[in-house]
Image 1 (cartoon, rainbow, N blue to C red):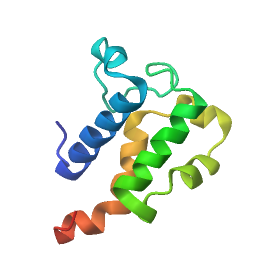
Image 2 (cartoon, rainbow, N blue to C red):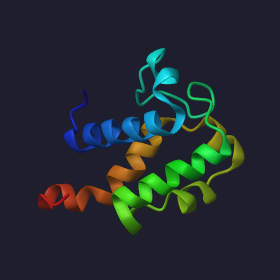
Image 3 (cartoon, one colour):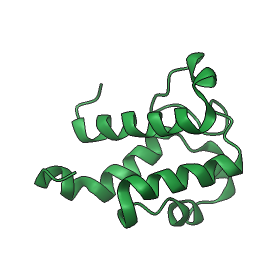
Image 4 (cartoon, rainbow, N blue to C red):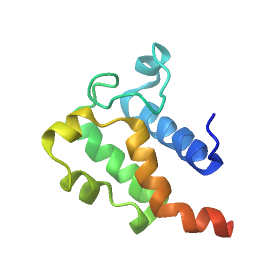
Length: 103
């Protein structure tokens, strides 16, 4: 657990989304942590990135635009991206709500 409860909550939400997308059996072997790589550790396919984008849209609405976030990255950055980097992005775009107490 980190010193940031907002980021910890987002990590748990993202881990749950990933479990739904890639399947619980894949995640039994490895816990999703901020250091988990989308390519190396989770072996996400492009269609799974699309599914994740859809789930993020459902959960966070327009505040978190995963497709625009990816579009700003080089292919090497996307391939090396970790769950923690995504959590940081989401936390930065939802922090005002967390401070205000809204969900």
